[in-house]
Image 1 (spheres, rainbow over the protein chains, first blue to last red):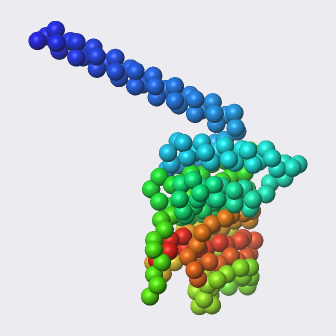
Image 2: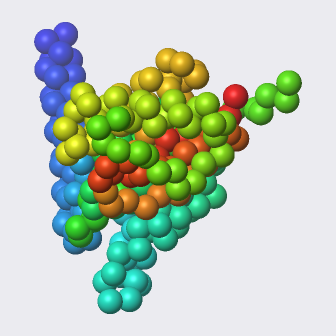
Image 3: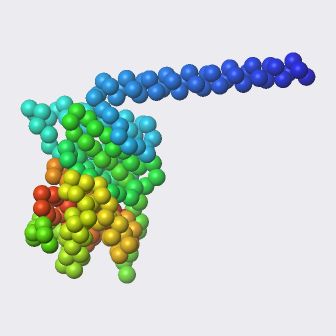
Amino acid sequence: MEGAQEELERRSKFLKSLIQKKKTIEQQEQHDHLQHNNVRVRACDMPLPLQNRAFRCARDLLDSMPSKKLDSKRLALTLKKEFDTSYGPAWHCIVGTSFGSYVTHSFGGFVYFSIDKVYVLLFKTAVEPLDHS
Amino acid sequence: MLEGKAMVKETDMSTKMQIHAMASASQALDLYDVYDCISIAAHIKKEFDSVYGNGWQCVVGSNFGCYFTHSSGTFIYFALATLNFLIFKGTSS
């Protein structure tokens, strides 16, 4: 029985170390990714794949804008439409260098990040059936 | 209003609701500094949630662009003092 107990403890420690290593690797990859794209997450309630989707979309569009002039509305439009299409309505996006906001968002549908010198707020609200009364 | 008159840029709200939005913004500017955009936005959003039901969103600032989906009759974008205000309801109900 003591042998079995020791074996269980050994396996448990091994699994825990595996999990920890995996987390560390994932965090490092995410950190590298953000650094490469000059992205900094300020606040977040969103699954990682969606975050990365937003960062990549923003990065691609900013890189394609001529003379580095920021077109806030176009970036907001692009992000909102991409997320509406991919993850269902209704997403909202605010982009700019100077704004504050106070919003209510769906669970798991909120990210506020900066990329280069611009700030991006992307969030989702529930869509309910229209009241036809 | 010490801040002067608000200028509506775009809206699909009823006139009564518009007036309420601008009065709420003016009140917020009396309470908070012009640089505290988040507190100003919070004040307005909470007012609208309590009076017209939950789901309101508010953005305040001097430099922003945005794209959003709003319920019918619940959108206003106006300027007051040095700030621009966007208020809308994001849920349909």
